[in-house]
Length: 149
Image (cartoon, rainbow, N blue to C red):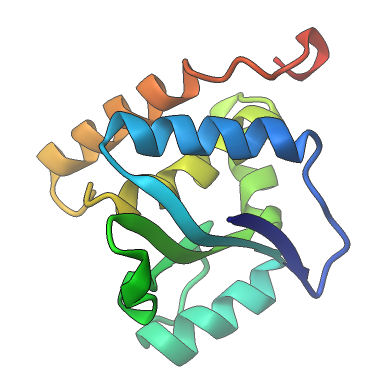
């Protein structure tokens, strides 16, 4: 089950059923099924608090992904996780990179899923693999309207 929540902000993504299918398709392309995947949309201050509390990092970021698969042993073979996304940073990055908000949000959303399937981005080589995987995943979106592209 893929769920969408918000923390300290009022936001819900459009076309949740399309997003769920897309995320499931991406997971399937890596041999996984969705388990419990929670997207929590929040503000910069809220994500900074999560970053400091759970990772000991005192800086802003666009996304933090927690793999919770071990919390659900009965869901073997399924991906479970909590994905926190700062909409403040996503909006700023969309402007900085010359991307639309929806495209940047989807890139960040799928970035979290790709971490859950085991793709890392710490080294330069891994960063390039992650970007390639993000672009491949973004190309699978069939649910977007012309206005959203």
